[in-house]
Length: 90
Image 1 (cartoon, helix red, strand yellow):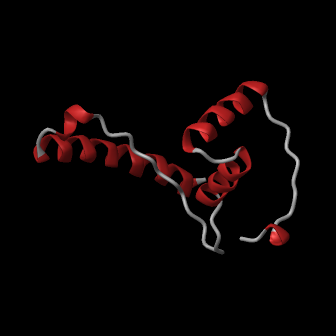
Image 2: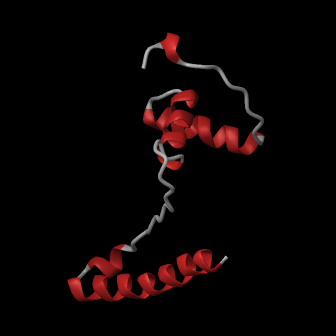
Image 3: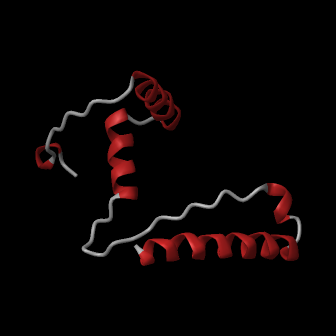
């Protein structure tokens, strides 16, 4: 995206979060602005469709065998269905 096609925007953010963003951006060798653009792209859909984002952090110890992993995922699936179904009921 060229610089001319971008709009400027100001946001207010807690200093602690700003510092975390600076550290994370530096680790990725990108600017804080680029980090924010990436976050917005990830969490704000670019289409008319509405999505729920689900992120699973899978512990290494449950990935030792397929059976362990499947059992762990099945337990989380039930919880996810209940949580998402609760949104439907609202």
